[in-house]
Image (cartoon, rainbow, N blue to C red; front, top):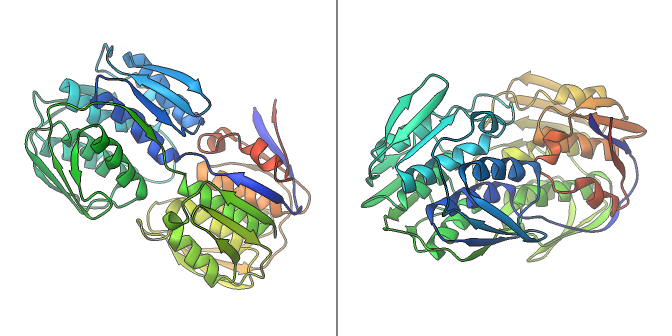
Length: 418
């Protein structure tokens, strides 16, 4: 079993480069299916989730070739089937992103209910209803769903709740639909705008991406070319918190600070000392004060940074209220932080109160999911003594070569296999 061993309570220094956005890579690769021409994708994060996605795509007949680190050529002209491998799909939530492109190009797709992190209810009803609005027929085969449509037809789709992946999936499907599609109450994340930029670059006609209303004029076909994935904003935020929680001067490079403005606002309220440039952030030792946050869809405070921010607040003076509004069950990791010395009270499944600062101590712990897992790494780096973190597969799903990158900053962390 793979695990991290971390000796904490050390100051770090140096530079750490932000990788390409995980939550864009997992959409750009499926988007290549919309065209039968090859596409070169740059700044690809080489993480477990992308590897699992490639397995599913290659099983369909897609050819993915590595040109150099972070650069891949994708050829989809030889796709031989429309049924996704059930066992592979169950391992990856993002496998659902293949549904829209496959349906749009081939008129049919069959897939099992996707897997991924266990962080509360994540149904696929919104996907299925959206595809039905575009004219698809849905057949429930018990263990799998089959979507069929001779030709998708543009329509007005009002999402009952904001969803990033539903917005992206319907936007991709609608690019090859007949007529005009409007998506209202759309998600506004930077990754959605970047996905639209990619599709438009290949010949799609999409306007409004990054706003609550997206309009897609369907086209007959898409071309292909090359595209560079934007920096990962969650990694940017995580590394900023890393510098603060270890009282370190570190420089986060190759990032886009405007994509984490809500986090930076909250950090400044917490008296964090930061230097912010157009493509970098420098952290400085800071005397932190307690600050409340409420997670919300973009441009609100990102739910994926809630756990790292919670760890940071264990080192801030005063009482902090953390209100998680996006996912059920995403605060249960705080029991582990209490075992490490934190003083956190769970008010209900969506709210916690943190009394800080408290000294954290190394413990043997298990990572419950991706974002809580990286939060435990941050806690371990700030803690006295040695922490052993198991189930690190979850962390490696989203952070590329994280041990090597942290070691270059001076962190005492190693990964072992037993």
